[in-house]
Length: 633
Image (cartoon, rainbow, N blue to C red; front, side, top):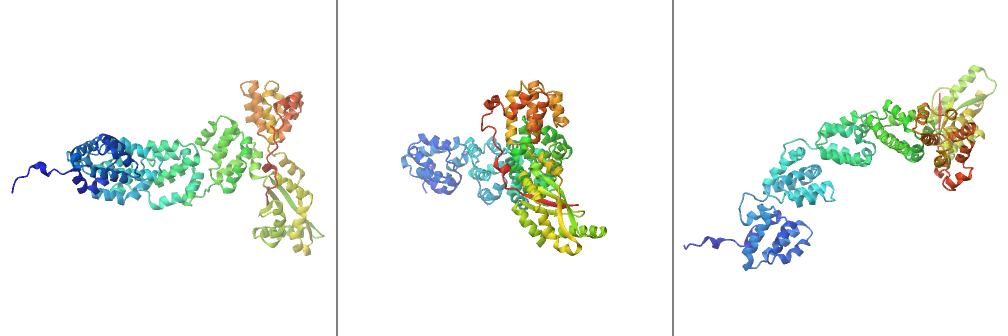
């Protein structure tokens, strides 16, 4: 056998590609860096634009290999040398070694490649590319800057970013797999390591992931991450790094922040779920625990009251004086110290009011009830009535024929029990009343034991006016008499008569919210009044001001600031405070100031032209009202 020189066995570029086509196609990265370096290579340079037009990485790789397969015989060696050099310069030594081995870098092994493919979907549910692992892969020279940019600066969803990370990794050298595992451990994603190797901590169980996913909307509405929960999760290491914490904290909208937290937890180890429950418990958010487990007594504020807070938001915000409320809300456990800081960090009273309303809407039902109690206790009864509706108390008296006193008492007792059962069970007698009441926006909600005391819950002051009309017209007497008297006619019952005192009606009229017209008359007069209105002690004595409000006015830095503070405070009180201020001004010889505020002067007319002091919105005075009726002991 004759000797054949070693050079004769040197394989051509074409042969190398044909023998290793599937391997090269799987691990080649047709990056801009690689293609840019091939622009000077004869024959290939004319194909670069066509290659770049391809959509997927595989399509680009295929087009590049096709171009290389068509290289003429006389250019095979020079093009292969250029291609190898371009591969090494662009960080693809493992591909270059297929053509000419100079190191131990080899393409991803079939075992590692198939493992990543098999576990792709599961890994993508938990891998968090934004939490440092991409930087780790860059620092250990697995990923290029181009790889990092294509992931981190894309507008892909997190799952898609994770998928792209794995797909890029599969094109790297085989030692990249172990470096990827190390990077996962380094960035505290060892639950992803567990998916790939069986070593590490368990990822979030499917049960917990499904629970978080199914409750996502409610968690978005009620979970308050900034209220201590996030800090607790960081301390317990359930939030696995500063990047996760910063990403969540950087979101300003509370609902979006809660959503980001939930999605972060769903990508975490399984023990993060228990850490979340513990954090909620420590930060007074047991109503959120109820959403997730149904095991706590505290429930979220009902949808009815959330809707009312939204419907009445503008009126409530315009009427709240936060300085009178926050300390009491904290002492009642309605607000935390975090809540207090968030409210007090706002500059204007309206901004503070908005924050209070937003926080209450994310709380428990008991916290909402505590908020209403605080309003009642801290001189905000008009705001409580705006939200809850006026509650008017009356008493049903029985008119009977000649019977003994004992028989009369027994009759009242029996009538009350029959009425209670009828309304609780929606019996015929109750239906007759409710048919008439519902046409006037009224409903009966409860009858308790004791004497026949009636509580009418009015949806708003328009409904309150309807109640007064039904009362003065004796229509309510007729309704109750027709429904219940016939059953007790043989016992002497002739009629049921409702009694509501004038004082009860007047009390609620005095608590009507400041009208938009009066509020704007006060605030639009501010510029004219800062030099004219004198905030004297005798003036303040004639106003219904709680000690806190009065103290705030008296401690204002300048007389001008006193005027502004007074006008703002009065604008947040019931509408009766407007008339009270005008009367107080006239009584303290400030008739000209009263005239400006009331809009009777030409000077005010110039400052507050027609249309500025608008009428109250139709929704505030419309007839779409609802009155609820309680009959209690």
